[in-house]
Length: 250
Image 1 (cartoon, one colour):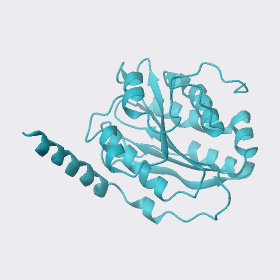
Image 2 (cartoon, rainbow, N blue to C red):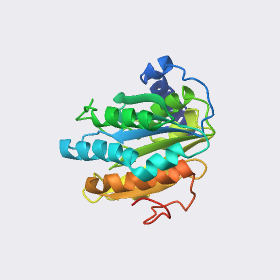
Image 3 (cartoon, rainbow, N blue to C red):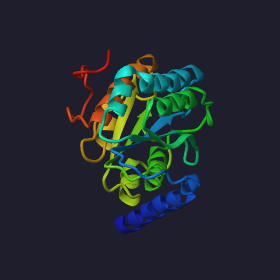
Image 4 (cartoon, one colour):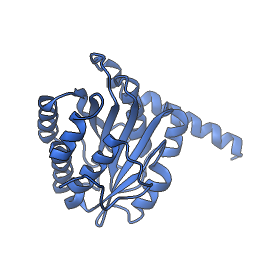
């Protein structure tokens, strides 16, 4: 096939994926407008490589990280609230919202978010890893997010994209201007030993983007806590994982 024909075909594929994605985010309620410093969408991998135990460690690790005293302090002592949304992702059309957009303005807001995440039940299993579609879903969520100073998608996973279009086409055909995409790569028992390299080279995107590493799902809570601390403080310490962050997270 000629190069021009291949490029046109890829564009059609990406656009088809855009219009085939679930459009539930279009109906998201508009939150009361108030100063907001960060809109953060957290995306959790529920593809076939993630078993029931690993799913629980991932879900509970996120809830515990959000509940960490240092993270609560960062959320509540910043210049304006943080807007948070959480969704699961796996195959091309398998995205499920756990937490719609909510403004974290006080401890009660954080308590409610932690409880909802901790009570989540896995929506999909047995599907491949369609990272481009997960990113497209995240871009749609950001289009419906409260107006905030920064927009960040935080995508966790233990493998590389193997279904549909990849991150490169997602970034080319979805509205990612001004959006940072960070990654949390799960290694040691993950689906692909090159997951960190893939996250650094293909997933990481936008101003200040970085990749944190969890050494297995048992390490997910620690890695997510560090990652949230960096994101909410807008710390730019480099592209890769940070073993220690000053002030976090005892």
